[in-house]
Structures are given as C-alpha cells and as structure tokens.
Image (cartoon, rainbow, N blue to C red; front, side, top):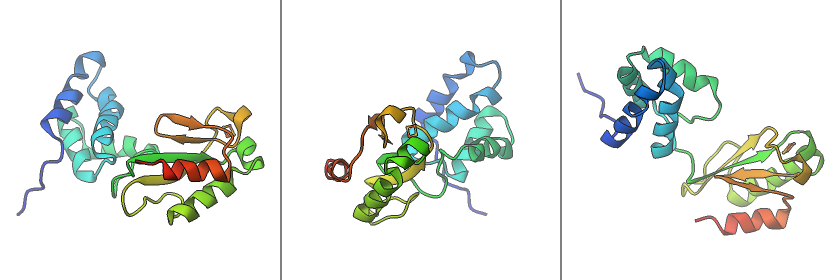
Length: 161
Ligand code: FES
C-alpha cells in the first residue's frame, strides 16, 4: 500500500491552526482553510481535502461538501497565475461582455473555464461584479477592469506577467 504524499506544507498547517482560537468550532474553519490552501496552490486537490479534514477533525466528505458548494475552488489542476472573471450579467451582457470574453478566449487560445498552457491565465464567467455603471467589467486578481473594449482586453493580455 502506498501513502499519498503530504500536500499541506508546515506553513499552510500553521496558518490554518492559527485560526482555531478565532472560530467557535473547528468546522467553522473549513472555508478559511480552503482559502489558505487555494492561496498557496491555486487549487485544492482531494489530498488537501483529506488533510484539512484531519486537521479540523472532520470527515473528508464534510470538507468536500463545503468546497463543492462554491464554484470558486478548482480541484483538478491549479488555476492560472492570474484568474480573470468576465461579467456576463445583464448590464455587461448588453454592453458586449460576452463578446469581450469570447475575444479574450480567442486571443489566449482557451475556452471559458480553461487555463493557458503556460499557466499565466484562467478565464472564467462571472455574475455581476458590482460595477454595472462601468459595464462591461472584468475582475482580474484584485483589479476591476471597467468599460472593457477589445483593445483594453488585448492590452490586459499583453501586460500579464
Ligand atoms: S452586470 Fe456586470 S458588473 Fe453588474
């Protein structure tokens, strides 16, 4: 029988354990723990779910339930170093948001939800990003890109690290 390689580093474990005093139960640490692992790995593989569950004294299924409730966490492979969400809710859709996403995907050679082979970018759909006055919008990392055009979208791609 082989033992799965440990995926949570000591640093991740320490960050998760540091949250214990701030929450009423270990179960309440589930979502923050998922975010910590995601911050370090850009995804949360199944082995990480098992290890988080062990730390929180939960069944792996309980952690997996929380993870799968949110569309945010990737589980099969790391997201790109930049993760960009293009809004497709009504204001942005009316002002060409879906065409912008299509253009970005075409330029990057991927489909929505995919990551470029060089790992630089993941492109995804988003629902309203709260910037309707500036539609169409895209959230990339912590930056909200407003009034997107094909040109500004191309400039965004060129400026990726
Ligand atoms: S509809 Fe796109 S930001 Fe609100």
